[in-house]
Length: 460
Ligand SMILES: Cc1cc2nc3c(=O)[nH]c(=O)nc-3n(C[C@H](O)[C@H](O)[C@H](O)COP(=O)(O)OP(=O)(O)OC[C@H]3O[C@@H](n4cnc5c(N)ncnc54)[C@H](O)[C@@H]3O)c2cc1C
Image (tube, rainbow, N blue to C red; front, side, top):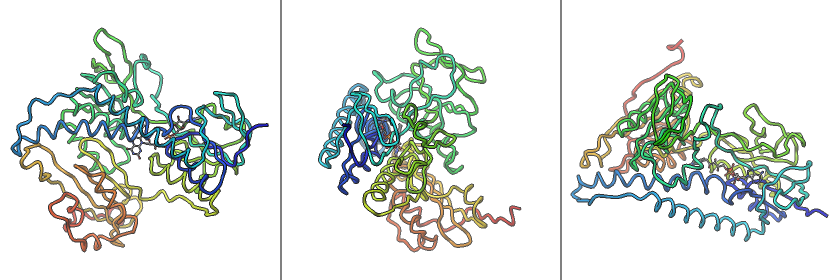
């Protein structure tokens, strides 16, 4: 007789672990399968190791900036293998913590790839065992997608491998203009690599506010990152000392490492979804409704495999809401609006709400407030850098519909501003809020002069 459970979760990442734990808390019998490492992308090869590498890279500027404040820092030396070993230790600690959380919640963990055999049966490939489940949750996440086949693609690494390089590349070419490409460009640049970023579009960070994109690009270039836009990598060839990379305009670069961060695809291949009739969208993502229910009523999907908003807190929230809905008797839809997010590039980006372009497309009147200033720390350090901040306001209601920042601590600042935006705060509320001085964040509540005003009638 196959084992029977109330819930079988496929994938022990951000969404799956949360859903399993909460469902078990409601009294459901739960089994979760993980084919790689418990914790998923975020813990093992995403947010967490990435942020640790970002911290490491930022010491370079700290050492340099210290001189202006009276410090003499002896020649600082960096050792990549030490960083990677320490990062690995922390990841292993977190993985163990996730496993014991599941154990404490009485979730049974199968270290195996799982596939759907029939609408209520899942097979564990490691043992061949089958498990009958009343409900199935697919939380298999996504994986790097290196784009179209080109000569030498086998030499290219993705973010997965970048976390485990044996040595710091002296020269690296990164293809991509999204947040993962930019974060790794910043990490390698600050750690001392020569970085070339190649992106097919006309500017980096598509989908973000245009002023943010322009400002960040300028700051990254100031730090010595070579940014090549409107080009793609057409071939990668192994040469004696590294790789020769050809671009579409026939320019070529010789580097020690080539990394693509050209997007991620939902992990649906070979899962058996077609067999049971789970519908996929055009991008290959699992189609779900507001409750994360798929086209098969007892099968749900959360996180990156649904390609809604691919961020850890979103996957966690979706997993929690699924458990509340199905096992807690509290139908909980997910609200994907006004999600604050950060790009841990150098400098950092923090953003929430609408871009100026989106606001113009949706609203009749848009007021813009923005400021560019030298961060206080840069006065004594002498670093050539500027912080950028912008508010997008609905000119008809005075509601702040977008906040954007490029500068130190932008992620931390935007998390808090995100509450005000979620509460539908007006510009007048921002103005009423007393500043915390001297901070960068205070600029969000002290911008008085409109930089521009746009009305639909005037534009038409
Ligand atoms: C480099 C990088 C940096 C990132 N940085 C951030 C950040 O700073 N902030 C942020 O919010 N988000 C970040 N993300 C995104 C974040 O990691 C994901 O949005 C999040 O992990 C999605 O969670 P999930 O539960 O959907 O899937 P995942 O966490 O990917 O978990 C899915 C799990 O399912 C397993 N699996 C897949 N198929 C099967 C199968 N058939 N059987 C068993 N197991 C299976 C996988 O091995 C994996 O462990 C980053 C991602 C990357 C790649």
